[in-house]
Image (cartoon, rainbow, N blue to C red; front, top):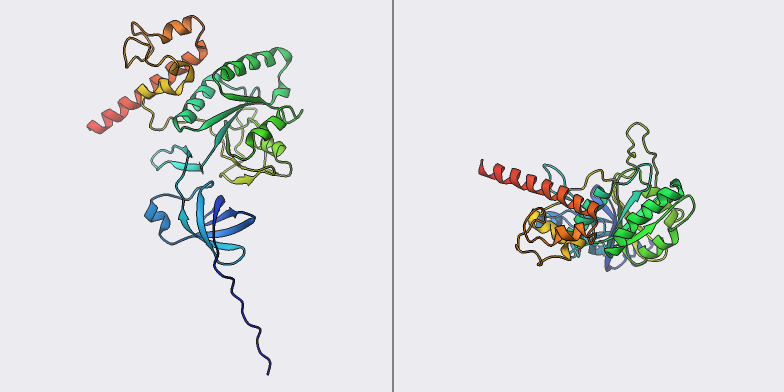
Length: 322
């Protein structure tokens, strides 16, 4: 009589890990040295009224050495969201330590107004921004000085700024060091070279890259979803879909001055507590602009964004009265 070999079941192991990729109902979780394909425990998402996002810390039970079931989603420290019309906002990455804003010096040329808008949005989410001026190899000596002056303005506001070039390798090691042991979300307009930059920071990553359209001057989207990639020296990076616009979610016009570090420095010094820093008597911000203590272009971007927020607020109030 031949006896069948006994079936050995692995004991259930409970682990904590980080969600690195989501495809449909399945997700991939890094738990120490293990990488498991996991399903979400039934009704957990509906009970918590949230959707799983990359970067989420979770508790799971193993089914096999390569599969598991997520039993608990741990509270998020931070979130990077994308506002969507007629839908609830999408959490792109959870538990982000820093947002790396990539702009290119040329092809396409960066706009200071866009940088200021995105920095304010990052400040509103209480996240730490890192500003990267990419494609330095495309600038001649004269234009490079212009970019350096712009970078100096942001460094004086205590923002971290790095200049990079994938072609020459300039700044790549500095960026790699800034990402060590952190969860970093990389974002910025399409065509600025985010994927090429990440390929340089993480050799062998192999993210798809695109070219800038000659007709529109805009880049083609090469990333359609966020995915966390483990960095060789520790930490993770997420390459997020390109953003051509960035909405200020839930920011009231009166709160905007606090999101501009240079203007926030004068908080409480104006005659009126609710000073908008436009034309009120006794405003301390306007003289600071005239005296060069606040960069004039930064101030102009503040005024433009405040006007947009006030118009949006007025529209929402009118809609509620109907």
